[in-house]
Length: 454
Picture: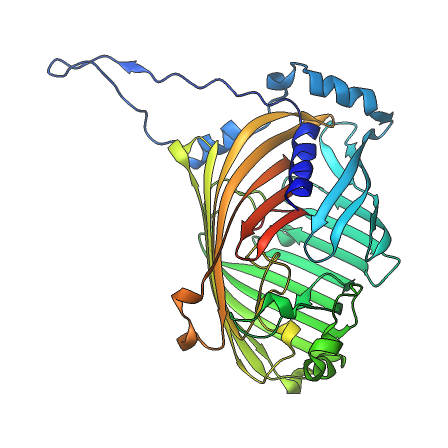
């Protein structure tokens, strides 16, 4: 596992341009007053506008060629719409095992402004459990804030996806932020291990989760940086046997499987108070995000269950010396449910994609969970990549979390710890490719995905 993870990390970093540091600005030497000794005085902390201006792209800075850039030019396929560069896929999941394939990336430029308006990322990969999986991804950037995603894939065994996502921070010219997602998704990746923080890794049982439905989210401004959030969703969900043949939920947890294999309707509405002064919805460098929410599901509104989910979340992005090169990112989440018992897949989970990167997806399940994550996001370089500007980043991190049956049952001694390190390619305006390597009591895990973990 370590060897595969290390190989993946090296591939991503070598795919980026040579790393070179930007020259540091010299501090000014201020002449002393009549009653003071000579000293070096720090300038006042930069404003948000100054920080963001420093982070803006300036093509004049990136004219210098390097050996990696020249190597990329050799394998680049130039088209009238933009360059295509084929990349290898080398992934190793503790849930599904290794995957191999190829992923050409096409960046489509606006011919007038020369800015990137969309990125097309098809791929074909092979996994022992899933077989061959062709995937089509299309990221569309109408401007610096709005964001479309179109994605479709189908594996030889079990997995498939058809998804549309849209986000705008200024709906129809207002200050209302809106996102919309519609999808049909079948994944064979997660596993179930039993309930509670004491569940055994030996009880691992694979399954396939099917989800079909839609979700609409709207943020309404109240006062500066404070929003009222409304989230509506309707999904039909069920499980079936998964692609991994070393144990299924239907075999190891037959009573749980009988309940979860029935198609169930989940119609939920969530109300939140949100504080958000971060600089970017997907690639934050500075600011804070905090939310308190209550979700409810009612049978009279078409749901098969009556329950409530309460959640409290905090994210903060702190710039060391306010220069943007070192960003300390911190995330807290407390979540718990009350009401009808739910199928295990609809309960809070802690794992690879839900706060604990060292573990497989769905590793810990119960009616509540606590998560704490901290990363130091270090920008190594900002360089031309695939004919447009990107950043390379490395981020040591620590994940901490646990699950519990009710808030009073939370115990600090049940916390799980997962340190690790990430390598990232940040493709502005709105895309980041991440390779995570994590380890801890659950062993090691290597993850490749699109997007920040928080």
